[in-house]
Amino acid sequence: MKFQKYANSFKDRPKYVSNCIKAFVAGGIICLIGHFIKDGFLSIGMNQETAGTWATVVLVCTAQLLTGFGVYDILGKLGGAGCSVPITGFANSVVAPAMEYKREGPVLGVGSKIFSLAGPVILLGLATSWAVGLIKWVLQIIF
Amino acid sequence: MDALMELLKVFVTGGLICVIGQILLDTTNLTAPRILVIYVVAGGLLTALGWYQPIVDFGGSGATVPLTGFGYTLVKGALEGLKKEGILGVITGGLKSSAAGISVALVFGYIIALIFNPKAKD
Image (cartoon, rainbow over all chains, first blue to last red; front, side, top):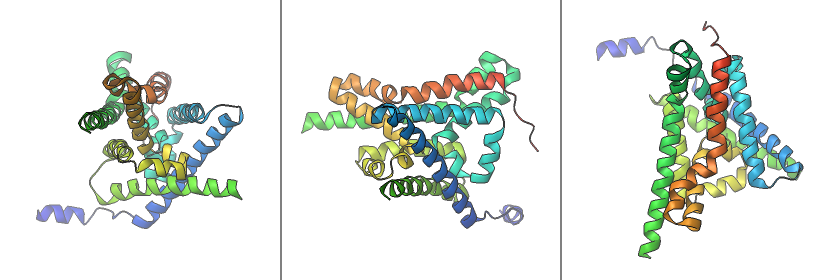
């Protein structure tokens, strides 16, 4: 315990305020980009839902391309959670571990590492949607 | 002026959701992947309680682009499925509504991972 305290005294304390400002600005900008993309699709006559889905597709592809070129890592360092919490951060963390495991082969290396973050996120999200749906179903039967 | 106000709402909503993530990252031992999972589940639960829809109505893309929006889409899909097809709709609804995002993230991500090599870390 004593050692832990001693070791911690060498750790940099996070700069809470400036980190939050960075996250606020970065997250806000990414959401604005998403908004503009959606607006673009709306202006060519798509309905709200289709335009929103297309905006997600464009955001995911762009973030993954930027990850491939090594640009998203740099943005991530600037924006902190502002870059990792939006869907673009999810897209980034699907690709990043897969790239690292290339030497293990395209099937068991890249193919399985693609799921190292996507797996838990999709699974637990899906499980939540089941739980909510089931509870609503039971409530409908009772009342 | 209205258009500008709308942009401001998107920016502030998205920004604030990300600030919560940053605070979790800095003050707890949670790592980024865990925060993403928490965000999806939290978004889903807030949607179930009916609290996330007002945030989406207010902030638009500011609420749907962060990963809480992914949870929102999943739960909304399951509830719509329940209405249309009963319990089978609950099973399929979540993935149906989020199919585009998940499919693209996986398949396009796979292609990118095969083409590009990781950049050397400094």
